[in-house]
Image (cartoon, rainbow, N blue to C red; front, side):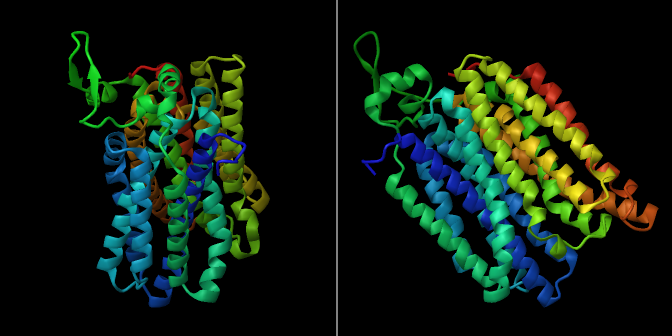
Length: 442
């Protein structure tokens, strides 16, 4: 690897990209494999929903602890531990829908383990990536989620068909082990020799976890222990932090509602067969992958060329992404053909991903030293949004079915898509008012 032409930080970014890709293959894979196994065993829809949602409860609980662990222990180490834990769980747990307790515990463990991943990644990227490369680095890393989801939906159903549902668990565990090997072999902390340069630019060694044994000199010639107290009160009382939290909530509300209910909209709302739609149903997620990276490159270009300040760049991309997405979401029930619905949902998800170059990178702007902590707080809100949104959408559709007798009319779906659309508008204004690109936590 020493002969590689690109800097080590690029390798770190590529490995974090691969980590998010593998994680979303696992999430999609479990849904596919469990659904097939549960249907074969005659499990009712309510029980299936309980198992499928268990992951998110574990995931929500570990976001803030994940940020704390990454800050205190180190994002590199915590990320590796997370992968080892969830990969081992996938490998060891049998996929038996009738053994509910085992599956619930397993999914909670996987959720808790994966909840440490994004806070750890943000801590690692804050250490390695200089400010002028942060947008495209974070965008590339998070775009792995969408590519992983698309790859899982395209490949894993065939694996289930030919090798059975349990084979998905084995394949996911193997991917996790392979990634862990490369991360263990090639991932390191930033070089100590670059300490002064790193400190000056707001990344690098100055953001590494500080051990209790480390000392610093004081003016009287003595030494004292270096401490790194996390300013919890300042973080939780910060308006820019809450601007990130609100936008993270909205992003994941819209994303999880579409991920979980768009197939139902195609089948019941538009009377379309998902099998006949082929690979076209995955275009919205590929669009997210593309637009996420476009947003990152565009943001870094605007900042590095001094076309816009960091603050204006974040607000500009966040506003454009969320406002266009809101229009597409509210227009979605109007489209009554497969092509129209695919186009509209692709625009909605694509511009949501573009907006991530605003709020999702802002953690590292305002608090590079505590990026994992802030990410943990905001991602907890995002996970809760998924739980609330998916559950509430089911209740809204039940009410619409009672009123309209079925779910084939546009009216029965209007509220489902208007809610995330209005949330996008509200969140974009909050981000415009309260966000900043300046560093406010030292």
